[in-house]
Image 1 (cartoon, rainbow, N blue to C red):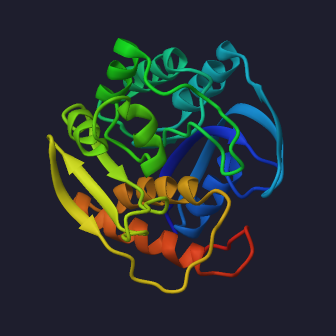
Image 2: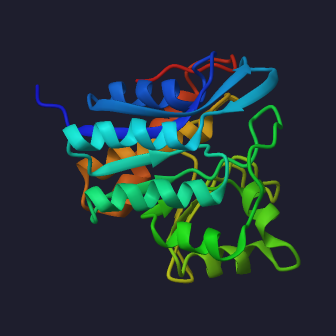
Length: 249
């Protein structure tokens, strides 16, 4: 069976619930060939986070370039990177090799265990990062941290003029928990209600959703269909058992 190539640029989590190994498990579930560039080494399990050691920027770029020199990559998922300036360097490198590459950026500001990885908005650099992405997948709390003194909806509308924004609804506290939203060009273009019940809290669920969406972009030209299927894949992951570590189907 022919497998399509897909790449994750993310950190290493020893529990494999999140990060690069979680992404690779998603890629395997989709029967795609996953490449991985490591951006950080963490000391954690699914319940406890101790430390994060960032991989040197030059080493990250060297990992990336040796893969791009050998293999054609059309879709990339990006997880944690130390800062927005380095994220922009990574994006520029990707676009140098393939200007049409589709980037799914999961802007992980904090771990599930509440470790802070990266600050919220970094001015013009942050704006340039967004412009280079096909879609970003923040959760509600991440959007809230970006909102400062404005309403969350106004923030996401503003950001969606720069890139598509798929808002993960697992942290919503407005009675609509699990309702994901898609914003494009300043407007709410689609809503994805939960379809599986019950689901259970999982370490790395945001990584799984963004990786699944990247995989779906290889399958569908219809972006809404890709979003629907990625959400369904993630819900099956959340429903797979009652522990913090899920399995993939």
